[in-house]
Length: 122
Ligand SMILES: [Zn+2]
Ligand SMILES: [Zn+2]
Image 1: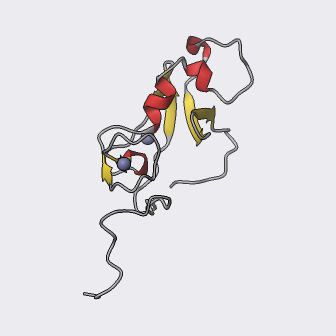
Image 2 (image 1 turned 90 degrees about the horizontal axis):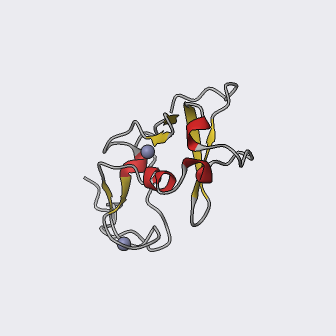
């Protein structure tokens, strides 16, 4: 037991915790929905249990049953969250496939993972 370097009980308000110990998962688009295959052990299921609008907020990151990204993308039409520039698509036109996502400050965009993506089995 080391006397130092215990994890803090409360995270600093502007430094997110290191979630690299939690596996990232491959999100997908399936049947016009954003799908997260992860569970409480996935990194996108770790977030504060509070009602603060942004993180990190100083509250502890705790495991959740739900992915934090999914409601951002499912919260409106799927095409509204599509990073591609095909504005006339309808949700049902979006093909199934592996998806990436980016947090844009106050919304989340998804895009398809290209078939030629670099190998990453993270
Ligand atoms: Zn909070
Ligand atoms: Zn997820």
